[in-house]
Structures are given as structure tokens and as C-alpha cells.
Image 1 (cartoon, rainbow, N blue to C red):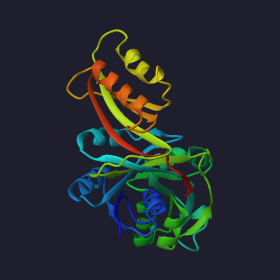
Image 2 (image 1 turned 180 degrees about the vertical axis):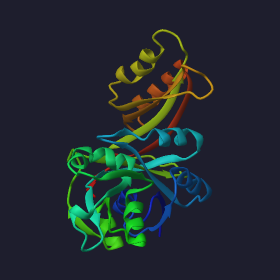
Image 3 (image 1 turned 90 degrees about the horizontal axis):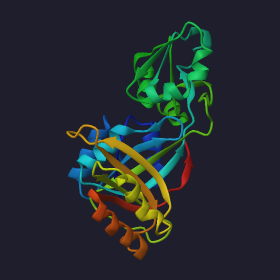
Length: 275
């Protein structure tokens, strides 16, 4: 049986993503993303799962930075449809609510709905499911949470209004981390990070190694290079497998142009599941 660590309380979206990929796994809830990285680093046979980007809110920059600091491999991914519901203790009515709790990203994703709630204080909390858990444990009849249907079921809350996210095409991509590298055989995808010298045309030439070989670039993300102001790291997702000749040639060419290159993982393109 696999062991998978995730950030958040039971009922969190990360737990749902983990169950989507590992339906029979032993799941370990942890307090922070850093805890997940450390758990996967210390346990060779275990996995960690973390969100890396949201289709509405953008990238989770903290996790890009943690990828660089830890020697883990991306071995899988899954895309989760995010559905957020307003929930409260059984018997509580909408006009009794004076506080709404949830993770800051979830609050941002429900901004339009929250503006319709008058005389309500919106409070950022450490976790969507954690806000539901707090309301249950403290028996807060003046408060509601924005969280998943699974969180409502887990903590015995009543859903007052379903699907209150502003954009219903709301997805989060999660990646799976492991100390053991894998290589996708079909529908392959790779993630890597590199830096280039601060000279004219350096980034253009680096990206051209993929264009020249007709390798599809799926995503690019830049992050500051700590300790070297105004220099950057570039994270790429590309289609292909490291064993394919054109991909191997592209990586060799990139190594000649870049000051630093690291392959973060090779894995199958992930499926999409409902939250």
C-alpha cells in the first residue's frame, strides 16, 4: 500500500487529488507544503502531492521554490475540478452568518459571491477543510466555511449554497513527488528548470532548442534566483520523454547555452477528475 502525504486537513482538495491517483493509499495530512516535501524526502517509498497551479489564481510560487530546494522527482500529475460550497452547522440559516472562513485562494476564487453577502466579515484561514473543521469543533453558529463537499461530509456541516466559485472552469493541477525517478513511456511530459547568463538573446536561444526540434512547450514560469538580484530561474513543462532522441538532443543543446539545468521529472500527462 502506497503512503501519500498532502497539505491540509481531511476533506482538503489535496486529499481528493491524492485519492484520485492513489485510491487505496494510506494518506498523511500535514500542516504545510514544506512538511510534505520533507516527508517525501525522508521516506524513500512514500509520495507527496502538492498543488502547483490553478487555472484561475495562477501558480503556487512557494512550491516552485521548494522544488528547487529538495532533491525530489515529479512522477505524476492530476488536474482537479475545484468546486467550492458555502457550509455551516446544521440548522444555521444564511442571515445568521457574520463570518466566512477559507483559504485565501478559495476566498479569491469566490469573490463575486462574497460581495453579495452583506454585513459579513471574510477571514483568511490556513486551509479550506481546516475552516470547516474549526466551525465544527467550536460550534460556530455565526460562521460559514468555503470548502469541498467532502469537507462538509467529513465534519457534518450543511451546504447552504453550492458552487459559489466565480469561474466554474476552475481547476488545480497537482504534482506527485518521490525520491525515485520514473520515465513515462507514452503521453510523456517533462518538467525542468534552468538559468541563463544575463546577456542579450540568452533566453530566446535557450527556448529555441525546443522549437528547432518541434518539441511542444506546455508552460514557462520564471522565479527570482535567490542571492543574484535581477537574475531568474525558468521552469518549463514540455511534451516528450527523456529517452527520445530529439528530446535528449534538445537537453544537450540547452546545457551548452544555460548556466544551470536540472530535469525535475518525467511522467504521464495527468487525467482530470471532479472535486
